[in-house]
Amino acid sequence: MANEKNLQNIIAHCKEYGFVFPSSEIYDGLSAVYDYGQYGVELKRNIRDYWWKSMTQMQDNNIVGLDAAIFMHPTVWKASGHVDNFSDPMIDNKDSKKRYRVDHLIEGYAETLDKESGDALLQQMDALLAANDFAGLKALIESNKIKCAISGTCNWTDVRQFNLMFSTEMGSVAEDANMVYLRPETAQGIFVNFLNVQKTGRMKIPFGIAQTGKAFRNEIVARGFIFRMREFEQMEMQFFVRPGTQKEWYEYWKDARMKWHLSLGIPAEHYRFHDHVKLAHYADAACDIEYDFPMGFKEVEGVHSRTDFDLKSHQEFSGKKLTYFDTEINQHYIPYVIETSIGLDRTVMMILSESYLEEDLSTAEKQDSRVVLKFPPMLAPIKLAILPLLKKDGLPEIAKELLNECKPHFRCFYEEKDTIGKRYRRMDAIGTPFCVTIDHQTKEDHAVTIRYRDTMTQERIPLSEVKNLVLEKTKMF
Ligand code: ATP
Image (cartoon, rainbow, N blue to C red):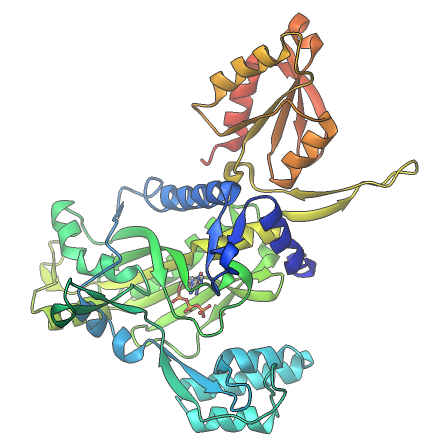
């Protein structure tokens, strides 16, 4: 179970093998901001590519892409409701001065209780959140004697709302400068371009627009490694439908997105749906797809039925018509929207959590173990390691020829140094699914030893078949 894995070991492994580094580490890091290293960047790109192709290329010619800017006109965020509503109820501990998100504080406490009492507490919390009952939330914290982890006291302020958007100024002189926000979600770039894409792409409803890109949130409690960051990447798709059909499409996308998750080879019992009780200001139905992270089941993706809230609001604030003419029913209307929104970094963390394994390989004769990342082969940063057994006798030449044949097709790694056993272990640690060794016999029989990461079994295959074997086993579709 992913749940039994130790998050600290995964974080340490990510740092040691060049997946994820704390941002600006030589200055002691920046809270909840991370950089992806040489293997992390490849893993992240592969996940992004898989999502992108699944959501555009593999659809029925009805979902197209977009790459909108991070900066947007400030009124966008008035219209979207983020200026007024994108806030979380917070509470401060008066002794430690530490600020907590109320739901996180209560959830953290609920985890320390037995299941029945924990669930009952969360139900009470959900009801109070749904009613925006801040006094009730404070009373719930006090009556349960929930303490601050730092001061250990229950000396709390009142519960208040805190906006999560970052702002900055655009313009060269202070007087002319306009306040702009760093987008807290990518979706609004899609809404404001809805008609541009629909008209120029001659799109017919139902159709979708997909986008990946950075989003920024001034998260108060940023924790859990790359689970909750202040700068992160989202992969979102807005699907525009005829009003009245949103329920069907909501169910369709819930199902389609769960299938996508299962296609990563992750067992169904590591996922669950969580239906929202308190709906966001724009939604008429919403659920999370939760994954069993090392710290328990948490959201990795949201599927939201956003109604016509966003387009209607942009039409009002901009004064520009955002209606669609449906030729099938001869009617103008503002489309309804189903959104699928998944965090790329959270997906990276999900894949790392699922793939990370500490295996005991001890035999009667000797103690042995390995750390292996059993990534789905299509997502592995390096697909093939090419390892000449010796640095001489023409073996590197044969190996480099293979490298030149393979590198236009997939990412390879070439290494001559160290014993073959050590080289295999390093490849296990970064999740390389295939290693081939070129030895003296290769010169005679034009065959190589291929070693499979997951089973560690080895077999001889013709040198000429390596490229096709790896291509076949690492293809996305
Ligand atoms: P949470 O409840 O965990 O704060 P959310 O419900 O606010 O998340 P959405 O607004 O639905 O999240 O965003 C969609 C997706 O974006 C989430 O499912 C998550 O994968 C990702 N995401 C949101 N906030 C962050 C963050 N601070 N760091 C990393 N990923 C995030």
